[in-house]
Image (cartoon, rainbow, N blue to C red):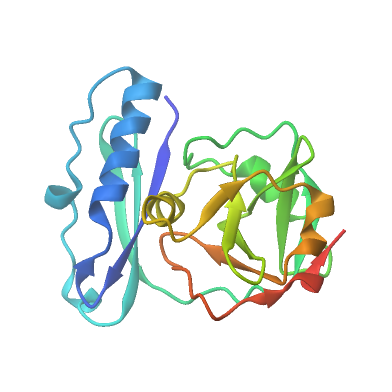
Length: 199
């Protein structure tokens, strides 16, 4: 039975965007294990006193039951440069705990900080986050990511970002990019310049 991972942001003792994480877990358990999900995050997550101030990451490993829940203080990764890497055979449609394939691709990043995976000629995700591109007016995210992250889902629902197919040759039409995931929200006026994506 494959193990799944959920990463949830805790801010000043409060669980952020709980319903989106619950929805993803419900969907994963139903599709992978063919049963209804009995895990209720609101009951399972007991925030320790140490996590009552600042930003913390709650990391949960689960199948049909929760195996591990752990908390750690969050320090954001500094990602400025991305290396384009082909990932045609990679399937990460669910947030699997086993990241061996992604880790192997990450080792090809060279001097860059992270990778930007390309599947069948279309941009997808970095090793740990979805990506959004700024065209001078709107924020665009790849239409078919490797993982449909909870932050991505929420921003699409709010019409904050737009989903479109993005080819490698389309990169030069954007001004910059920003990474998003459960720990990193979209900051509209901050982005890395597009020149920092390397072939």
